[in-house]
Image 1: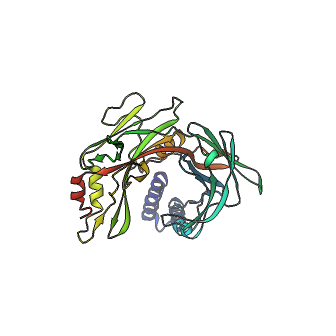
Image 2 (image 1 turned 45 degrees about the vertical axis):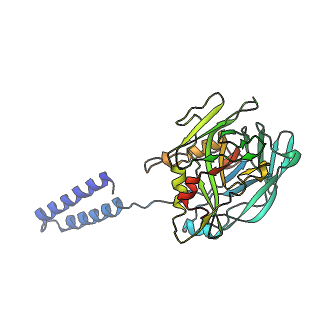
Image 3 (image 1 turned 60 degrees about the vertical axis):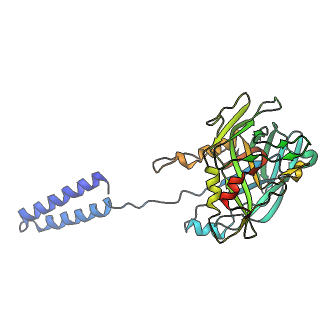
Length: 368
């Protein structure tokens, strides 16, 4: 109830009661009209209804992240929805992806036309379990190149004036220098034992080729593949927060360093292996070999370079920067004839397999 209306209603009631007291017998019509006036203002001042749904409009959602290490790039196109019913129930029973579009990618003197793939199962989530994706095949001579610009174009024969556009620059792949693959005198390659139970420094070069590096931010992940009672499992640490300067350790020219806190990775691993009735194992039979491809990859350290647009998208949507009193417009680099949100970005990743120390294996109860 608005303050002005509330004050007016209060004084109206006061006036009516006072009038009734002073002239109950002399002015019955005045009393009746005053009570009717009070009821009118009470009904008008307490009306707080408002329209939840905005006027209908088409809002497209485009999401795609190019990765030069992948032979297939996927683009997803859908529409924003706001039904008058329960939005979660609607999303559980309806696929909002849009089929029948023409999706093209151009860059590095190549022009790619996407192939529509229907009924692609989603990996997780409670919404509709299948979606439509647009697949772009980038292998062999048509593989994506670091440092190159790629333009995305989306159109539809049924919508002659419709077109969405975006572009990205693929960042240069980082080069991890520590931890690294160790070489023995006989030429045999061995995994470096990384003490995740303590502090760990991860160092990498951000630029090797001398070309302009288009990465804006970086992140680190640790992946561990193991078995629980012969059932394959995976533990993932990260991604870390985005960073573009060294974190708690020294880097150097074109090189960054990130210090993982004391035991934070190990504690995460241990939290997955608390069932004393289960047997936990992981493959370490090829921690040394004469071929890199033969080395065990049970534990992998990865550093990912992220382009400008995807970095802005992640930062803008980071929940750490939001509260109940904050409203921010979603960042998007999708443009065109219609209103659109989403992101079209690119990443490049370098990974190195590592080994756990004997102490970590013992404390985790691995390979008993």
